[in-house]
Length: 292
Image (cartoon, rainbow, N blue to C red):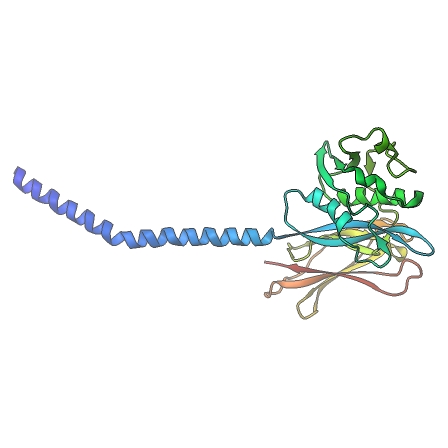
């Protein structure tokens, strides 16, 4: 083959390659754009899912007959400093429960919360020491903070500091019980309200099958019933179980329940128990859930 004929073929080949690249360019650009759109949508979904957190917060309640703890579920914006935010809820947010109170002085600042070896150390400003709530209120006030923080899986015990130390005036705390036996551990035996709460699943959580149900109950004979219903309140599955303790004690419960998820993807978990005093007055706790 002559050099002239070979050159002509090379030019023809180059022209065809260039033409193919030109024709393919829009598809390549479209494909890149499509991928970016998918990534953006995924990022938005992930951010949306992380908008809120559900936390358990414990307050002291005073009645004419008794003083005890109540647990409330609060919704907070998603944060990397959830432990500090949870303690701030105890200080700044008024309890929803009638007769429950904020025992920590409102002008108290949470200087920081650090976790080491599963023990959370909470550093308060000096205003924490200004509370005046009596000996019973002091014990329950301390336990309200401890129970709030031990709701988080990373925390098993809690210690307190005032302006960076737990010695001197800080050790006396509110003047009765003090910090002599810290770190403190979780104790829900004095939590009388609500009678039932659910720790798993969380509200609007995407659940699997079987559905794992966990929580705490202070109910008559410790008897618990759970059921899953669809958006129209049709019962998809029902199951009975027991808490680890009978009222007036508080116990934990855990069970799994199988059901066939409907196509609409939304429903509700319902947990039932009886009045801890006499077995009457059916108690129901509802948790909205989703499934794929």
